[in-house]
Image (cartoon, rainbow, N blue to C red; front, side, top):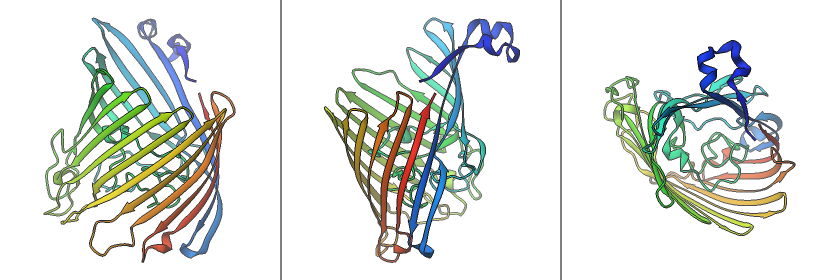
Length: 358
């Protein structure tokens, strides 16, 4: 549960005018896991202790009158084990994206904006609308992550595999109000001259959007993102890359169902021809008291003719148990199997973790 403190408590850091008009919310999470990774490569079988996206954040708002307010947030990752099992998806070095770290403080969603009846406008570092569309992944921020994280191996994602499920810097984003269960978000990302051969100098060198509809037990999201040739190019002739993601979720009492379909192109710099890869993830959960059981199946298909080494099938089973409203324990088993020629990347992971939110 988030803990609110009046800014007077930090009066030594703020002027009297500031703390007289505002408050600050401190929030965060500590997340650790103990994992056994059995990877076929080099016959590796090892135990590891890992951080799983621990974080701390500060946020606040100031009433500007007329139904408008200023909103801000500063959030950083806290790696409390000096290792990272669940790092960010591999993305081109040319992208102005927040990188993971082997320790210390790393920037997460950090922004300043305005909110009112018109919606919310944010400027800074933020998850793209595409990422905010979510997925059917029941084991996010664990070593069994199937969406955007490191998972069992650096390639074991089936959603976000081509780098579209990310947090980027230089973001200008708009989030609409909600009308009868529907809202949308859109963002432009400035490349700021990061390309070698082209000129990414606009506010929409990459752009991302998502539409969300939620009605009772059902939720549906549709996301689309485009990274222009200027944004990702390091060689002349590189084409733009696109990702489209549909996510469906439905609750029936104690049972939760989820399905995600993603079509995306490889964003690796220098690639001239691009074909659409496909990722699918289906999950089912069952809640019984303080314990929730989960099962999910994933499949990634490389659309390049004759390429099967990067095709991937996964299955994951596990359980979460709420020890309190803020503390949760979990156990999971993840199996990742690659196609012919890529089986040296096959991996099995047993993960046990503890999460605490504040």
